[in-house]
Image 1: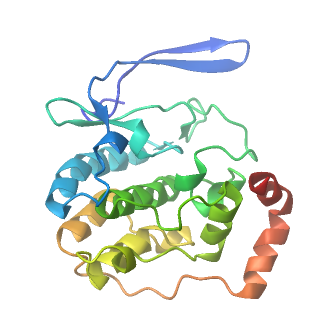
Image 2 (image 1 turned 45 degrees about the vertical axis):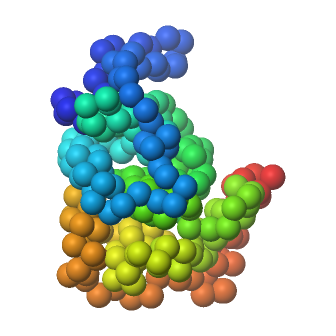
Length: 239
């Protein structure tokens, strides 16, 4: 992978069935360190996020899914260039970069898409979901749920589709922009924006020109069916 906004992999090491990556050192601060408590102004956020979105679309076209996208895994150099780091649990179409086993939940719960609960059929849409959480956090200074919730409770809210709309927590975010952000965090992967760059262009335009999509929540019956299907895994997260 050769992209100025993706950390270069210098070497892949295989030892006793384990895989390790030797990646370039990137100086600067993590994106997490740059998030103001009150949120980042939209133009400033777009300036950082547009190159990140294009890099994500690039790796997705190469058949690679990061699977642990979060502000801590993006460095912003002193020159202002954002760089995506830490492909330690990335998954490729041919499996060469996969550090994980099918059926094992991997990632950081706060940014994981609902479908990552069992790591099956995880595609670019999972990275887009995480990117949506990141954009929400950058613009509002908080995540789309109450503080100090357990990982199990956070995942339950995701499975229910019960995340707090961005315009509820930040007065400068319009309802149209909020809908665009929340669409990227849709419970169903097919409802999310079709690319990260298209999403950021929507953010830059105040959420304009959104496609009309159906309400993205689960009924009580559907939620119980999902919980039963993933029962052991959900219980493990809640512990």
